[in-house]
Image (cartoon, rainbow, N blue to C red; front, side, top):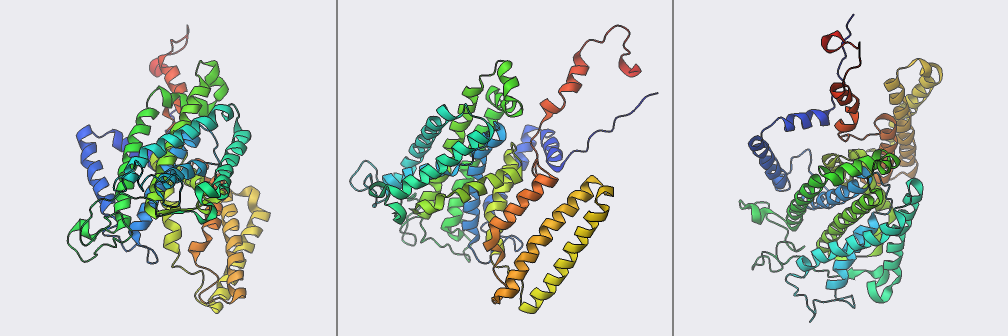
Amino acid sequence: MSTTTTPARAGLGDALRTWWDGLSRPAQWAVGVPAIIALALLPLFPPPVLDTPAYNFGLVMAEFAMFALIAIGLNVVVGQAGLLDLGYVGFYAIGAYTVGLLTSPNSPWNQTDGGWLDPQWAWLACLPIAVAVTALSGLILGSPTLRLRGDYLAIVTLGFGEIVRLLADNLHELTNGSLGLSEVAYPHVGESESKPNGVFSAGNTGDPASANLLDRASYGTYWYWLGLALVIVVLLIVGNLERSRVGRAWVAIREDEDAAEIMGVPTFKFKLWAFLIGAAVGGLSGAMYAGQVQFINPTGFNIINSMLFLCAVVIGGQGNKLGVIFGAFIIAYLPKRLTSVNLVDSESTGYVLLIVDVVLFVGLLVLWRYKGRDLGAWVRRGVIAGMVFTGVMAALLLGSVLLFRPGGAQSLGDLKYLYFGIALVVMMILRPQGLFPVRQKLLSYGRQVYQAVRKPTVGEPIGAGK
């Protein structure tokens, strides 16, 4: 009697990856280049569904590009090597302060006023310096701490992020303390009579009515284009590392560090590589942030931002480069999009929605209490997620109707920490691998490969007789 094995259903990420791998190299270029061009033109022609009424869409996309760089760097540490880093914002801050200290008039180390940096190209010159300094800080931090694992490593990295912020806040003579560093250098490119400070200056608001795409673009769009180019370069570098011996060592360490060490993998060296590369990418994003905002202070590098960066990696899918970029888009875009959305339109509407929400919560609670054991696994997870959602919404609606604020208690954009926290809870319950799970072909199909190549024992049926 023969049995047939039903293949596991592939997810969306696996289906797209299989389709992409099936294309020839010219076909991949034919698909990839137009897709990148479409992404580049998105801020110039924002679709009504994606547009952000309360914010300039170009600036939102520029923030997304910075978050994408951070997510890719953090993914090397957390997703590829499996090292829980809760203080990644420290590297982000070091990159930003490197540019600020060398180019801001408020800094005693300013090199643009008679120093060795020309204000025209100071930011471009500081970019590799920021990457090198941040990579060195990752090396210094990782050398004594990467012998720790799990929660202990997470606590040390959390402390590192706070130490960097506190140093920036208390070294008044150097960093100007909580007042921060202003007039940070930025790229002086495309200067003209209409744009005397260049296209990357905040004075470039763009001309939406212009037929010339370069004149139509605001400074946020130019920063987005620069960030998009940096993301592509970093993706190529990290992708090649992932397919090399280094990437295979990272996967082995992530899955089982003890087994990897027994098999001869120098785990400490490759963990240090991951920390160094992740720190360098974080510093690159920090330098981009300092140039765009042209002002930095310690409050922009608190632990909450570090948690948001980690949310992007967890929600998108740890270990999947395109997945964490999608997670970065959610983190950057969703709060800006929801800023113009109020929870309720009026007090009476709030009471009606509150009653409906409470009824739904009680119904789900009764269903869980009396029928929970008889439900399927996915139905149980859906009921749990529904109770969490309706419970939180009940608290928000109650606050809206009790505070009597016009248009509801708050806009949904102000509640980003709340719904990202809920999203993490729901993701851990329903899909802990993230929206786009990492490819695990070598690990998942190891048994099938072994069975295919091993020699059959005496008397064991082979071929169709199995």
